[in-house]
Amino acid sequence: MLVEGFLHSQGDTRVITRNTGTENEAILIGERSDSPVRVLVAAHGSSTGFAALNAGTADIWASSRPVKSSELSQMAGRADLTELASEHVIAIDGLAILVHPSNPVNQLSIDTLARIFAGQISNWAELGGRNEPINLYARDDRSGTWDTFKSLVLRKQFTLDATAQRYESNDQLSDDVSLDPAGIGFAGLASVRNSKVLAISDGAAPALKPNQLTVASEDYPLARRLFMYTPGERTTPLAKAFIEFALGQEGQEIVSRSGFVSQTPIAVKPELDGKAPSTFKRLTGNYQRLTVNFRFAEGRTRLDNKAQRDLARVMSFLDSHNQSADDVLLIGFADAQSNELRAQMISELRALSVRKALSTKGLKNVAYTGYGHYMPVGTVGGDSGQQRNGRVEVWVRTR
Image 1: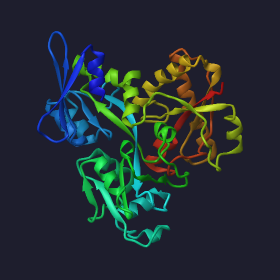
Image 2: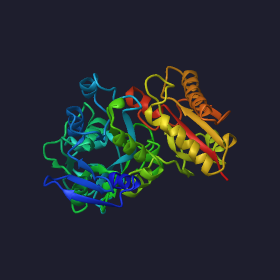
Image 3: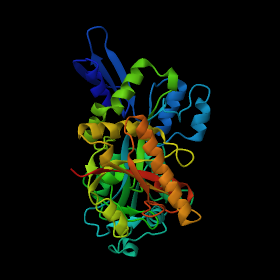
Image 4: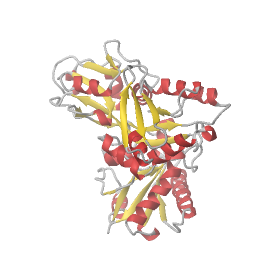
């Protein structure tokens, strides 16, 4: 969809799609007056995408997981795939946990989910469901969806049970789960189809279902970024133009139509969990929350690559809604620290970092505050807690 939209934006009056004879591959041909542009799109899993980029047989590597350290090393002589010029977040996806529509179970913790897929919990009656064996549905080993599930759910503590049925296709997996009253599986948010989606909790944080706010803000514990990687300064002009198209407004509209979650901010009034402090409810009473969180790379205050592009997206939202710095409130959060004061200081520093970054874009003197380690969205402590709980939310005044 993105390639077709891009070719049309380049002036191609018609785009023809042809099969290559290989499953999950297509050639898109854009007709133009001088010479046609041919684009091969091959979808065989994130690891094979990197292999093609590394071998020089692909200009762009699409991946549903971040680049691995081993892949970074292989490309080190040509490009740093962690740099802004190489790493591009195209969309946000929610890893949906799927069951049959008649299943009475509505939510699970990540730990319980891991034990289910490891075969340690094997009957729905153990979870408050019907007395019947649990049937497992999982993506195959070449899939970025599987990499994400393994990383976020199984981690290094659990191994997928050998009875699980494996799939190359998200859609086919979801269709089969929707026909099996005892089934449970996982797929990308765009592939929910006729299955029921469960709410998922991480640690003491509230259970959340994947939706526009929880996924776009990455509060949902099984949210993931969808990437495209290019070889930095070695990227071809046409590939660079395609990336900019995909990141721009027209490309992000295509992302929304595809069923994934666009990075274009919208303002929503969230339903705050009962654990939210009363002071927080009063503070945000006259505000709506944007569907974007600023998150950080190494250290506690350096914005990551997505956040650097999100600065421009926030500015664009404010311009289109005739709102100014006076209408914006930044609220920083931290993971648990050695004491409450330290967490408060870190959360304020994070909010101040975003404030300074927005100032360089022309938005001066934005109000900011910190909420320390309160209202976590992930397990406290460890890499996951630091990455997910350490965030800055953006709130805009209700008009």
